[in-house]
Image (tube, rainbow, N blue to C red):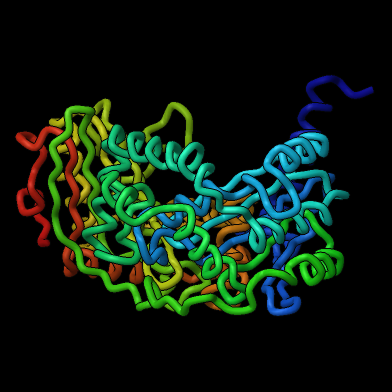
Length: 458
């Protein structure tokens, strides 16, 4: 008979041997399995992609090249998003709501700088109904003036007020405007109501819908659907969408060009600074740089470990009470690597200076190999998690199909990050310092520093 101590010791030894063998088979943060790969195709001119997750639910999205970057007039993207699911030639708003609720589904419409997304979540067996519904929304939505005045316009004004109340949103929008001017620089919510009353009405939104929902300008993506079945329904229910845009608009189609600069906005609702530099495009774009994701993780700011400041340079250097986050914003043909700092004016000012010093340290090689290894692991996990996330995966894949004719495959992204070396990270940091910075300050301008005061050129 074994004693309790002997049994526990034997169990611990078996676990240790198993973990050792497992670690030899599995590299650091191994990529996801093939189940996360998208299958793509085209049905009657409509691009589509799907991945068949094992489960009882499906998420379906129509991703259109109709974000604020591509709108020919201010407010059109928001207007189009807010008209979605409000009634078609076949179904009233009430019918859409009641049928969707009876099926236990949820419907949503939202937009980003490059994309307009119509999203439906539902039980797997209801795929035909919701593919048909998205086809109807794209081809036969009724753009009625009274609906615009009573339901759509108030939502646009609400988004405008919410934007003006957030110093963080204002700083991020300002940074994009400085970095890219037009195109990617157009804010997702306008800072002025005047353009809406000047340019926007139901008829103009309807005209734009015939551009946004033309077959070359959107893709349909599904998570949790059989590829063959999905192909069948896409081919059947998207027959009535325009085969070509009613107008070949060139707005936003030019290659994005990084410029940089500085803007300072007085605000009594808090303090925020955004410090940005040229970044990487998405993986499906032509200017993808995996080292930018690693550099962003190294700068960091937010800890992923409870009760710890984390390994990131800015997480350890931030002033008490100051929130810091480094983001690699990726788009189809460009990107923006930026650090957002929010807090008291004094805390934001000192942390902004620390952020610039951190980039200089990385560029000069004053960073240990262990820190870079941690940053690679964190960047790899974030990319895998982001691609695995249903909503992010839908938009990235749809965006890739529309702009660059291929889906976003997270396994390939993980392999690209595996190939990043210490030298490429240092080189990327040097290139940031050599380029014009993007600096946006919102809040107490008496305290918040200018770019040159923290060692940046604009």
